[in-house]
Length: 232
Image 1 (cartoon, rainbow, N blue to C red):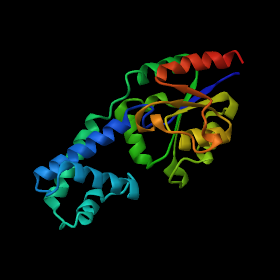
Image 2 (cartoon, helix red, strand yellow):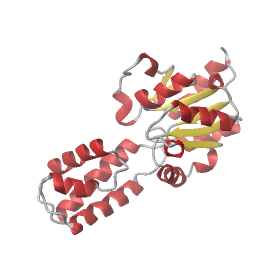
Image 3 (cartoon, one colour):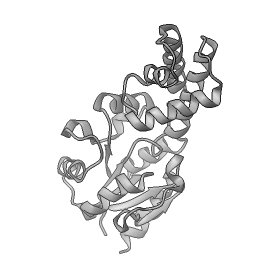
Image 4 (cartoon, rainbow, N blue to C red):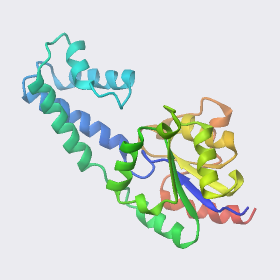
């Protein structure tokens, strides 16, 4: 099999977003408590987690909604303390996995076309790629918002394939999310690779189509898979 392109998700694939989010939320609650939030750390963290799960990570009023749900008055000092701590911690943990950049460099040197297919807000996802220092490695970056979509969809992969000038069976897609990225990649006919990282590492496929063709624990293992595919 002649593989010409390798596509990647961003979160928990290129960097540890699960750890980043946990630490950012934890430090935000700690800062809010220090600023006068009258709850313990466990209750505050759980309430924030519930709100994020309900309203989504791109919702702009998580802390406001948290005070409301806790039956507390709106307090700009407490909210601001949470925002500052969250942003500072998030930035501190926005670092690529140790094998991310070496793997991308080697793939480029070997002549593979590289791309990103991810869900989320376009500007935010580009900010992550730029701050991770990997944006210049990719020949194509397709984010769901650009196509008017909230989540990963087959259309994103089709656009990426078109931009790269490759066919589905010539393309590998790496993601930690079985029931999103891997599912959609399989539906389009890509060679799917699940990387066991982050909170999704224990996830099980909800549909037969969400079962990956390959599984890896580290990004550098992709080269073994590419070697295997060459022999098919």
